[in-house]
Length: 241
Image (cartoon, rainbow, N blue to C red; front, side, top):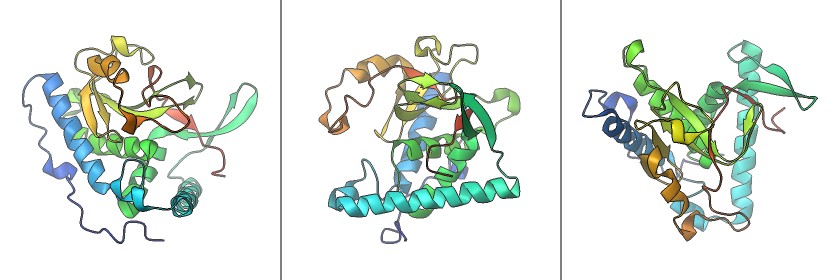
């Protein structure tokens, strides 16, 4: 199944095309980089949540895409584990044994699948944003690199976070990852799903926006809840193995 094959012309912004030269204050620079990341990720998207073409898809076709990508993810995870590229660890959560993997490894596979097939939802888009920004940060001297992290709006637990996915760039490393009010003035939210980039100080006002396009049929506002940074290690979602 070639999900993106019908729409091969994409205006992609690559990491090598983005200047990392300082352009102003840290908040201004972080915001500019976040906008570049959103543009890059949205350029990859041909199907999925908030992709215009999905409005023309019938439900069975959309579910078929999800099933296909789930199979691709499982295959690539298993291959990476067999070759030693990824390490599967077993953790106990509430007395139950779970398979866990580094969030960065999971994100890298999602990014490759998005580039290859053009299909993504909030989780895949956040992973792609994270990988794109990490590539940019790798061009900087190590002492000058800022934090790039996947976060979510919702409940947090051992090795998992529930809720809408997005990325934060420039969080104060000494702040509380479970309390966005401590993340500092340089922190910027990068939300490719919503096609937005904004300072973390604007998060509360975003929660109050009555935008019907960002509501689901059976859930509340997509930003309902508290911002939490993802753990570095996550449990593998049920059904992948």
